[in-house]
Image: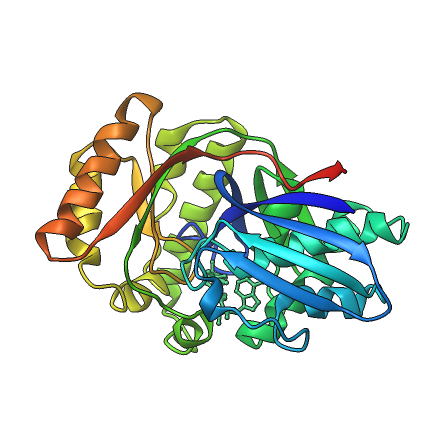
Length: 293
Ligand SMILES: Nc1ncnc2c1ncn2[C@@H]1O[C@H](COP(=O)(O)OP(=O)(O)OP(=O)(O)O)[C@@H](O)[C@H]1O
Ligand SMILES: N[C@@H](CCO)C(=O)O
């Protein structure tokens, strides 16, 4: 039996819709695999009652199919589904790494990115790789067409998860078909600033580069209390705040010294609106880790 711990991720970071992603130190999914004649899946843990065990409906089933690697696959969910923390992608990334090793397929982590993205196509209708890439490779990733660039970094972040769910499929439905040139110019400038911030491990620069006037305003309207939580996080010292992935999680970047204050302010702001939430004080971290039992 092989075991993989695959980390949660936060995609988009505002200015990098469908392009940017980061791996988070916590939370994570644990995926265990064992060779079998046909794929069977069991799911336990956070939100497991909402996750199908049918291989044709679970992201790991699509990965097993793509690698031609049938297995008994146990998923212990540490990442709640429909959270904006790349829950479906973490399972897919974990399964890709584990099954690649179990069947000696010899693919590199970068080569596993499009295979894990098959799982994302199953649940959201499109094979976007901005969650599976950081879950496999760690750090900050840039997905552009078939090309993935990775940067190691350890910026502190807070992800606040309200007790509400938004499916990626629904959140993709509100993305505008076109954008004004001035908004595109502003977003490109921000994305470039954020990228330099990641390479310099600089929370101030990363935060400055998170604003996006195209997708985030539409997405944030799906999250009860977003504006208040956004404002509270900035007042508490966050350098940038945006929707995590497709939401409803909200991502704040900050200096380590402000992390506790930012987390408390976000939870309190949701609380004042009658919304229960949980804040993860974490940082950008490593990709999936493989253990031989
Ligand atoms: N192994 C899996 N883990 C989690 N969700 C899964 C899995 N397989 C299928 N699903 C389905 O995928 C959907 C959750 O995926 P979705 O992309 O909407 O959320 P997410 O991964 O938390 O968000 P985001 O991609 O915005 O970070 C749910 O409908 C869930 O039932
Ligand atoms: N880039 C994707 C990430 C969520 O899976 C989106 O925002 O729809």
